[in-house]
Length: 459
Image (cartoon, rainbow, N blue to C red; front, side):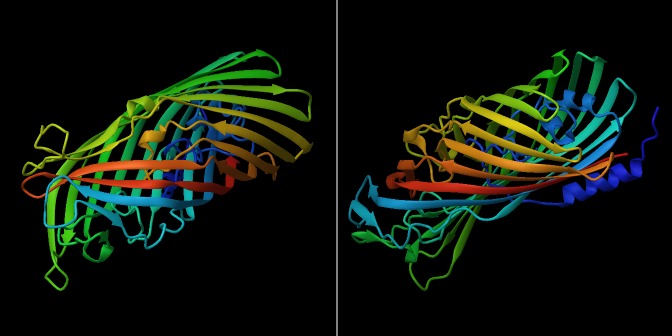
């Protein structure tokens, strides 16, 4: 049995956890694909051997690595999400001394809601013997950051939306023979959410609503969830491998606080109300089929088909754990439903095709293209997640320094289909639960650039 240095392992784990990132999803909805190398558009992710980072997709891949190894991956994500407005309105359901129908002042379309961020991942594997490998992966499988100018025309729907997750995934692989391997693991997943928007102040009357007297509404919370994953790797022929893997759904119960702050009239003292809240959210299960075929000693072709069960996510219902608060059209249960964000997602598919070209003994080039379906239905698209179908174009190179160390550089350009928004939000105001209906119309024009670097070392 090979000796395992736990000192190196603990240093690696602590360093990875300390590397906190803000994530913007560049896969469907707010799923992240930056937990492995992207040069071939993730094609063959669960079947191409030798890359430790692919254990995040299929833990059986570890059986293709014949020594203990460590890998660190960082992807710089530079998204652009720009809104073009067709108008926004607000309407109250009862007389409050202000016009019943008002337009919302367009003081800008929010600017670029995306921002440059870094998404990290880290992996460690202990080669126990020729059959058994033990591994640890620390990744960010889901994430979201969109942030608009606080005075933008859609401020009553969203200003800042941030979801970060950290998944700690101990796993194993077992090589039965040269034709078949399997693996599995468990996940401990930490989630943190922050949602802010403007809230209407009844004193902000007139025919046009301006941001001068808006209240600020925010919600913050954290959660821990648990799941598992597993996969198989089959090599029916010498130069061909197939992988099939499954990652379970993870149930989160986010607990935290909701706050409302502002002043009723200009110049008055600021107030701030805080209530404890909780919300349930299920992050979906994922099934991935991968294929890898060596055409000859220099060329290989790969493919991936991935299914994500986004239909689990119907809405984000925030329940007040203090005094009862009612939202129009929703029942009051578990302390009172305070707000609800409708998703009503549908299941989505991801298809990718890639090529590998071995230029020399120590230099490899990769190319890929992918189509990523959106789970978002047009009638429920939100500026918090302005998602649409997208096409990936990727390239990358891998350089082996020696038998132990190698570095990978990847680039991806992602083009989004224009995302139309016709959003209606219904909330309530005051002790009489007066309904307030706010609409937002327009479209998003989006794209994203990704640059990834990975270093892997076998010892």
